[in-house]
Amino acid sequence: MNAEQPLLRRWTRHEYARLIDESFLDEDEPIELLDGLLLLKEPQTSPHRTAVLLVATALERAFGEGWFVQTQSPITLGDRSEPEPDVCVVRGSPRDYVDAHPTRPALVVEVAQSGLRLARGRKAAAYARARIADYWIVNLVDRVLEAHREPARPGPARRHWGYAAVETLGPDATITPLAAPSAAIRVADLLP
Amino acid sequence: MQLMASYETRTRRFSRAEYERLIDLGVFQPGEPIELIGGELMVAEPQGVAHYTAIVKTAKALEAAFGPGWHARTQGPIGLDDDSEPEPDIAVVPGSPEDYSRAHPSRPVLTVEVSESSLAIDRHHKGSLYARAGLPDYWILNLVDRVLEVCREPAADSTAPFGWRYIHHEVFDASAGVTPLAAPGSSIAVSRLLP
Image (cartoon, rainbow over all chains, first blue to last red; front, top):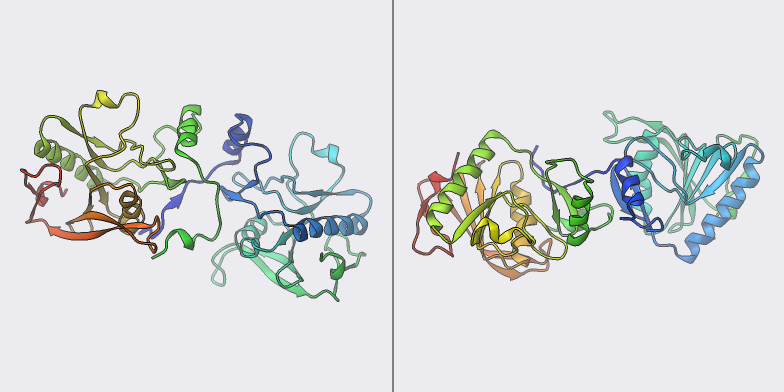
């Protein structure tokens, strides 16, 4: 090993919980634990917040009974990740998760503007590694939806975990969530 | 080389006061090799046999060169600035260990890093941090090439990771002698530092 850059210390989920319990971190501090790193979240601009609300509304309608939609709330992915995706769709009802955060959302959505690189990079890697089957990025820079599917492990073709199938959809396209096969959502309805 | 800017993502920074609170809370594992560098919690270089030997030899040589009234701390914390608490391999400070029982020293007269796999970091990243803090005499004991690199004269440089760097950089091989800025009457053979 000949490091060119200092290595950041990685935090476990347990340690992260302690930082919150000890009031070291404020519960409302805009950070999330991803792959052991305490990442600062993208600032909530008005278009960002609008997109989050639009996506949540569209997904509630598309999934219907037996599912619920949570916004900017934690999910648990392994020992070193507790991200707070902008929107995710979880099976069951909120009371099912009174003792532990959801671990396997059927769909995760991030709204990204300044955080686009992060959403496509580290976050995609963490979600793919957790075998999240359906990961969407509402790309506010290009006003498109990126659907990331087919989690793929690192190998000769890729250095990190990632998604083998990435489709970019313009406002006129429609998309069907993998876990709600009879629904069709217009991309335009997700964009602010 | 802009090390800071090459980070893909922004992580939560810690102040030195927060870092010391984390230590008091017992959040870290005992003996965990971490340092606070410019607000970031860095994992220090794993220590090999040669690395450790070099630290012991260098500390002994420096204590002999500086004499009474000084002591060489090994891998002890330095309260460098508001968001940095590095643990350099050796730091020569005035006084005795008891003088620092309430607060870490902040201005070593000589700071040494023993470098094997972390040369680039010690030169650019830590060099810039130490230059920003105004540390006058910074040595890198380069075990790869078996030389001593002496860095002096901190100066502002916006391209450096922390906005400062040492403009004087001199390399001494094993046969050379070196004189610390704060011990002008002494001369230390570089071979006495190398493992």
